[in-house]
Amino acid sequence: AAPARAGAAPVSDADDAKWLRYSDEQRERTGFLEFKPFEHPQLGTVHIGGFVPGFKMNPPDAEVAALAEQQANFLLQLAGKLPKINVDEPWVEDIGGGLWRIGVRVSNEGWMPTRSALALKARRLPPMGVVIDVPEDAVLVGERRVRIASLAGGGGSRTMEWTVLRPSGGDVKVTITSSEFGEKVVMVPLKATARKQKAVAPPSEPEIVPVVQPGNSATPSPSAPTDPKEGTR
Image (cartoon, rainbow, N blue to C red; front, side, top):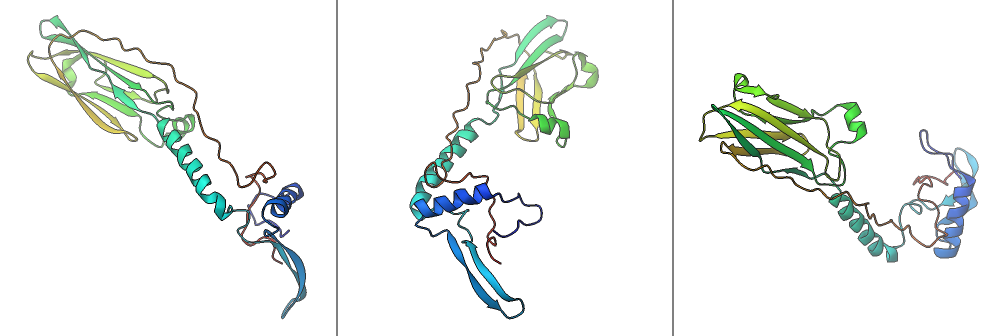
């Protein structure tokens, strides 16, 4: 086999043996060309042969449709596991004297967390922000702007509570902003409401469809290196 390119994974004899067996047993020996001498005008006698370019990358035409369907199903299931932000109906308590206690709960109903551990470490994106739109001096209890680094999958949540001084009869705007999920605005009427407790189902294990490689169990490992120029000397 031709030497591996700089930076490419090393080619092992065991991998090549699997590919040769797969070519012989399932692809009618179409994947490998026997080495033959060739008179090169500058190099003299050389030997040309090896794996057919693209053989390790492209499945047989007869298997393309089934593989495409499996890949599509995999992607659909993966998309169904993505984070899903939900904002519960806010609750309001009239304390009296123009004081209101407001609560908003933000949860993640998807299977995956809103941000991975690597993303949290890299800190390339700002955290999710929750802002209550009242003057700074009107917030007596709580932070006017709350930052949420990440919400765990399967019901991870964060509840924000504020005590604000506002006249009755109006609305208070709460804005949830995320680089990944966009912006959601919640208008909170200043009238007393009951606080609702929402049960969150535990996350289920993902049911990912395995991607079948061309052929049967004799098919080489998908980690086998591929190089369209390999095998040519």
